[in-house]
Image 1: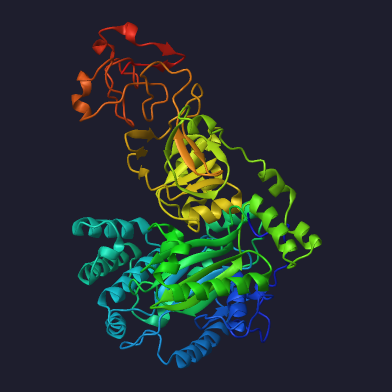
Image 2: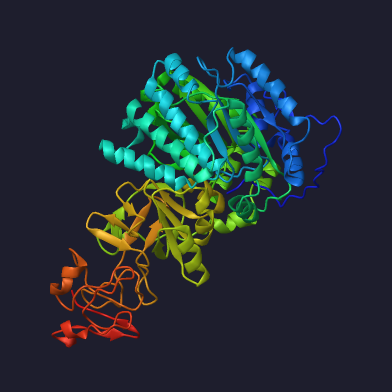
Length: 613
């Protein structure tokens, strides 16, 4: 669920008042200034005031964003204010932004009043250039780390600020891993990453029509404007409509000195919850990823480990984090969602907010906080609503037969990110999910991991299944906020988005698997233990399966090249995608009946053509 709130009304004052202050240091704000500093900036200031380890930085207000969006230009005083706060930050850190021999690097992050996870833009490692990457390598004593940070900057900056298609960078990265014979980014060495940086810069020059900027201040200024503009992206507008957030609030921008989780095995990044956001139970909940930056956890690109394992990896940081989690929950009197980074054994807090939770968790947490004396009953009642009460009645599958070895087949397990049970046709991209749902079809959106561009498909789907990511990945957080059934990190499942199918062992689920006459073969649930399963049609003919994307053609599965499939058993092989390949019955208006030696082995129902395997 989202933060528990009623529809909000705001009255914008987008003119630029005389003497308006547009930039606040983290030491100047507090948690009550969310209207001005956004949720992230206000909470960074609050944690700074509490004496928690927060990297120094400053926040540009929502008022500056509104002026920019209304006029097309930043406020006249903004550049000078940013310069003054940047100078103060450089003095505090004893280094200059992008300094060649020892660069100060910063992140530029969005932060609206109400949490909009992944809907607006972030750029990390600003200040790196061809010159400063060498200095960073020398200071860190780790050449690989420096070039990894540089390729991340070019990738994020190219996509977010310059509008380059992010898939181009991902394809180049995948090609580099394939050439190296590895499967994860961390197995690429410094030499590999140097080559990748050159490729990324070529992609930027070709597709953005300009070179990647080497001036660190230009990088920061362009990133700030990109964050302002991300308030009005299609995905942000869609999310605001879904969550009933006013469109005139604007976003703050947080400029924060970088701390690095990708310095090696003694570094990492993670997300923690003070209680389980799915069930509300007290305990240690969250995800941790060694040798990574924060976006790796949220994006779900690499599978995380449970937060509890941090105790065996770095007990000192784990104990400090647990103490901070208790401090924050007591201070905010609510479930807190926390982002943190460990840099060579030093814990840093990057964000906290009142966490999203499921309806069941909302009721349980409110009750527990009353029992603990943190809130009274009147406050507890204000934290839940009728819509959440309805969500408590989410369906779940009857798994008694499955536990007894009967009924639907268990295909795999993942992380119970958001509870419920969902049934629908398997789809592998958001466009198809939206298109089919508008035609009245129920769909399950299946992805390796989701990103903010998948929001419309997530809204359209009955449920979401990903093969990567954890309880704090983009898919998990957004689905939980919408009350949408979601299973994440189902590692047994191989998702092939190009061939539009998923594979679990010998079982293959093609896109569109399901039909009005079948018993809903594509299923996802995360009620108690997350399942995904396939079930045969209760009206199916023995041995007949449905062809991938031809809704009126059925055929047995075949192997090998389709050009050599005429010798398959029964009536032959079925079509895959749009290429007619069956010698049995009409497909795409092309008669193929000659190969059916015994027509009696095939039967038809309605307009569907069946064949025997």
